Length: 122
Image (cartoon, rainbow, N blue to C red):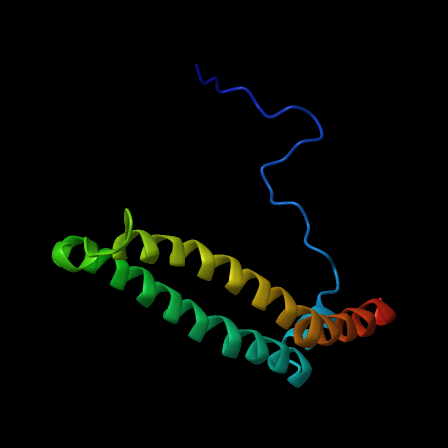
């Protein structure tokens, strides 16, 4: 139940103060070095994401509309659908591994350089 009493002493309805000097962070965000880091990440992540989603949707669409093809036995009780399904897991792990190597080789050195420069200014 709401009351019309004033707020307790020492508390106000105002938003807490933001850090007084955000200039170094804004300069870093607008720098060519940071733009290069973002571009390096995007040129890897976006195409790979689109490729994986397309691969997944192909699997779903084939499962829904090409049951005869997906039910084709390859050997024993192994059919095309099972191979595609296991392929989804395999590609997920391969993409994670590939991204990890990409991050260590290309992203981390750039991010470390930006962080070192930013922490040196602080």
